[in-house]
Length: 230
Image 1: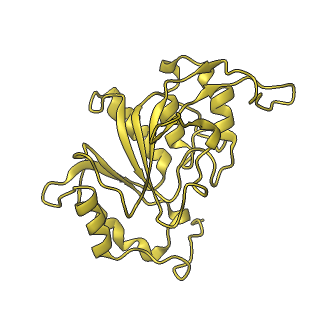
Image 2: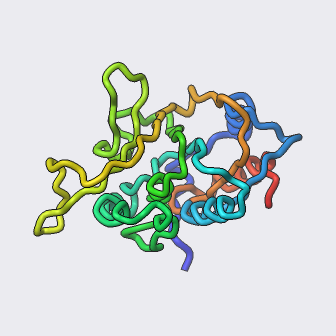
Image 3: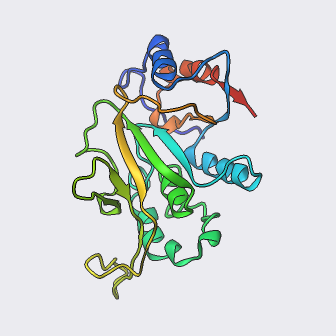
């Protein structure tokens, strides 16, 4: 049974011209020189593809990732907070090499947590979250306990910590962490203000049918014109 999608009259997709302006003027893409990439239905499919590219030597870690989305995909929206809890209490207890293949489960790797598992695998040198223009820093779905802001710094850092639990399975947030992961620069950019700082090596698109109305489907072809599928 097909999953129900948002109604066309509830969300208004961008026009083709606006999408092309974002991709060309703001991201520096060029239809005449499409970048390697691929179209996916759900975001967790992208996680496994990135792992394949890493293992094939086509993508070297750590790398910068630019995530343009209405959701942060860090374990909150849609699937609850269990992925974040499981990462902090169980997954980070493993050696880094054993963190590459998380369980595909609503409480672990799912379309709304893939970015967090990539961070736990130490894939990223920097995360740029390009968010919806109507969101602000108070309403963005990022687990604030995972972010660190140094005094005088202009950007935040994603800092994952391995945490102990109490007898009820709840995280002991006030206790010192058992271990702390290397901090990852975490930049928030409004989609209207974002400008790329260099050329992209790969471009990926995920449809996410649960969050996109049918009226937006025509933009898939528009965006894929900048991607050399492989």
